[in-house]
Length: 438
Ligand SMILES: NC(=O)c1ccc[n+]([C@@H]2O[C@H](COP(=O)([O-])OP(=O)(O)OC[C@H]3O[C@@H](n4cnc5c(N)ncnc54)[C@H](O)[C@@H]3O)[C@@H](O)[C@H]2O)c1
Ligand SMILES: [Zn+2]
Ligand SMILES: [Zn+2]
Image 1: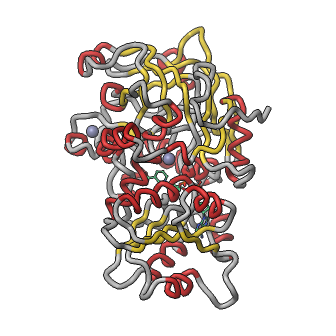
Image 2: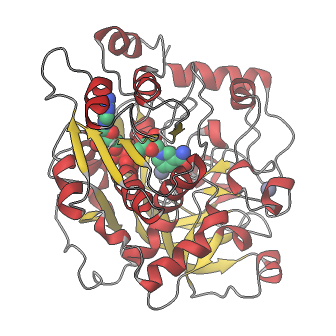
Image 3: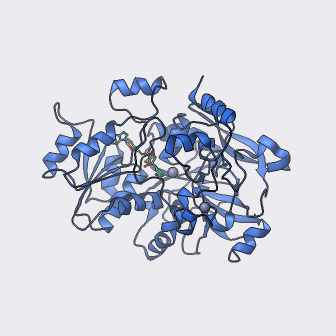
């Protein structure tokens, strides 16, 4: 039996915890249309349809379910490296038909009465970006803006057992994270909408503001939580969008050198965007040279800071590769071991890549988006950071299923995409034009 099915069965047998203050497992409004879906209107949404399979489907449009809900018309979404863990079934407790997508922005279409009351600044028609995690706004963690650890939005028992506690509920991230429908869709329901949205000012287009949902907060958190200081030499594993932004943020925080480790065209891309970056292609090292020995050669005693921006599902050796294929492990520790052996004594290792199951690493955890997004928005406005540097393609929601597989295979130079819907405006100046994959 597939891991996802088995874990769903166990969750059903043991039952959910009783901590959540918002409805759980509404991962597609069609599951119980009478309660969660519009009786007449439908929308397009990207659904998980089984291991290694996603499809654009016509599903019921979501409705306001609770008093603090907001319904958004989605004007932009994207793909994250974390979505590949779902595609591959490396994150457990997915169910066929779950709507994915945890990074999105849009326009407020409707609001529950308590959402308007708690946040009188929000109005129908406002442009907003949504945090990938769902915070209640009131619990001990939410009061400190540590929204990724909200205690009231995820009652999953298996996650609690495996991690010793629950993360916050997350959009489009399986029943393991509460089973909340995601935003790779034309509409999305935002629980506790008064707390989880940030207004986008007119001078910040969707093509920049969208990335406050996750990638910017995640890479900022990785850099500041691990503690990059003036003069540090920082090595970053993974030159995807998270690694790319970590490199920029490391320099902003005083790094003297940044060395990126990866295996493909992405190293050339990040170097082209930021020529100060040094690169190591781990597939092109001479026989007998390891990533660790190469880094030791480049930096006396090793880098001060090592950041993991890859994820646990990427095996390097055959042993781990086959164990993963057979479902005997969900994560491999090979990359983290490489960080540990490479880092100089008294140095710091930060782990942002997701390690899902049978191994648990205490890393940077899920970035608390609400802690950082006001500051990051100001940095976008002042031009200090430019998230559109990551942006390589603009595509239609209707093509997103095909683009999942291209992104997975690192084809067509896809770094970070902007997914438009029928509600999106034309591309902002300087951002990529539409690529048609139909
Ligand atoms: N903690 C959080 O809140 C959070 C949020 C978002 C993403 N993430 C994690 O960050 C990871 C990176 O995100 P992304 O969007 O940049 O992903 P991505 O999949 O686009 O990039 C990952 C990169 O890692 C490279 N890679 C694979 N094996 C490697 C190895 N052995 N050594 C070095 N590089 C290797 C790949 O070639 C790829 O370029 C995600 O996979 C996810 O696990 C965490
Ligand atoms: Zn993500
Ligand atoms: Zn909370």
